[in-house]
Length: 78
Image (tube, rainbow, N blue to C red):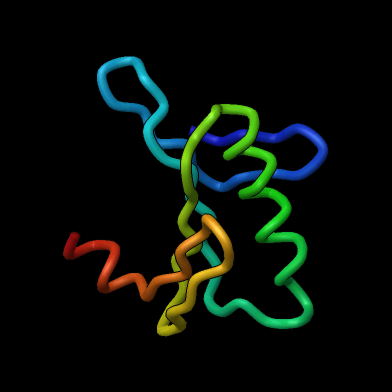
């Protein structure tokens, strides 16, 4: 599922008819895409009243407020 308003969010995860998670995916979070990726996720978090969001990258890991940046392998193994 994909969401777009002012910004866009790559995936909205739905379970049993309820939206559970907002996810952005990028190879890496850099100065050239950081604002775009974070703003899209923040917009989806607010719109769907979620507690947090996830940005999946190749190998980066950090916490940005209520956004977890995690490597793809960790996301897939959770």
